[in-house]
Image (cartoon, rainbow, N blue to C red; front, side):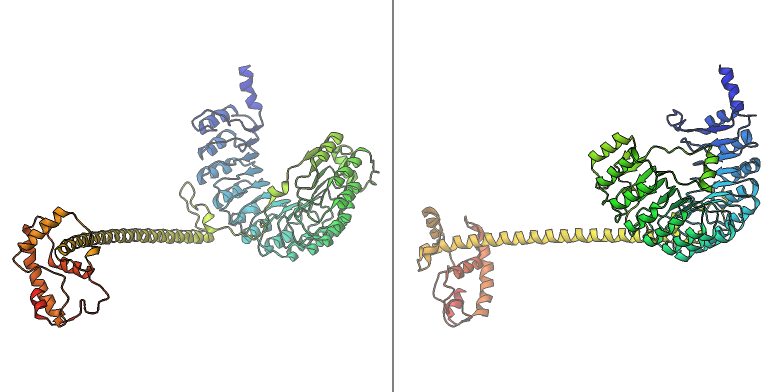
Length: 624
């Protein structure tokens, strides 16, 4: 059996590694170059035609492209390199080897203009190209699109794709049938006009927005694409009733139409859908708030309608839903998420239609006959699907409907997950979102002048931001130092104030004590307010006063003619003498200035004679 298993690899034509290495216990926990090499060696000499690496996590490098080219490149028809690291040299070698390549997908890779240039130049049979999510692609590589016959091109979310690049692609691809350029924000109405002029074979077109500089007249030009079958113009605010009218008149084969988020679309535009009653099978009108029950009459004329999406159409009521359900017998999927005016009445009517009503089949048309022949007989309807999240339908009625009909019913509100209220606003991709222009080999794409200018602007912005950051850091340091110095100065001033307050308190207490002891020897009218310090202390203090050699301070009435400046001069001299004499006292030393302050404290402050500046008595001068 092991030998049979090894031989079976030689007959394999399709290799898809879907979820194969999700729990792989290798060095990287994913598909590596070494494991990939061992797999491709088993297919050597086989007729492998399809290789898909998108369904498994991988840690492949550019070396994996050389492995593909050496083991299975000659007969490879379809190749999916989603998420694989590319380099200019290895991709060039791969495209030179895979001459029969028809389907190429390099979505989510670091592919640039040069990689696509080599693919379009070497793969002459290329029909399908998918490079979605590439933020480096401008479109200059499509100048080589004339070498191959492209039929399907997927460029979704290529934010830097320009009208010039689209002009190269559309002008050199007359056989193009499928074009998907949703969320390519740099495209304008010129790209739509080029599509209508050069791609007459176009069958599927996805230009979901938002796009700037696109007007209603540009969408009206899509009516010239007579073979168009699938059209998506989601979130295009400029898509109006006039544009839809022109499309309905010119595109008679239209089967799928999606115009979700087209807020300017109203009942007048929906009325033109009646001309597509025998072809339209899928219709999406979500978030079109101007569509009311009047427009439901036109929807009821779509007898082959199979799927209707009317999310967040707040103007629709039970009357519109009942009319559509009754007149559209082929309906098998209905999405009413966010329609708050839909109640249990619609669900009850739908249940009765599915169980009891048997509407007559519509008269067969040429389109219906062709569809039956292509599918091998009358088509069988799939199970009914219903989405009622965000409506007024109760859970009890939902349970009854699901139990009675066996249909799939979801109460999840899909209108909340689809888009935000401001999702239709114009978006501009910032230049700094572009990837680096240098590939792995160091080859710089000098032909991309717009991207180079954007890279220079990005470097200038980065340098300017760094300078601003340095200035802010220096300002913060300076402010911190200033705050620290201010704090130190405040603490120093507080300490000085505290010391001064403490000194003044000590001086006041000493002066009060001295004045009280002196008043005991010669009482006065103010002695009653002097505190008492004890008899022993008072007697000792009186003895010392009697032994003093120099006159002592007494509370005498102030002479009327003493001069204040003369008093101050003698006061300073007596203060120095007293300080030297008081050093031998047992009691704490107290200068004459403190005694004078005490005398001033106990004198009557309201006495006009006390402390007058006009003293002239000689006795007061001698006493000082």
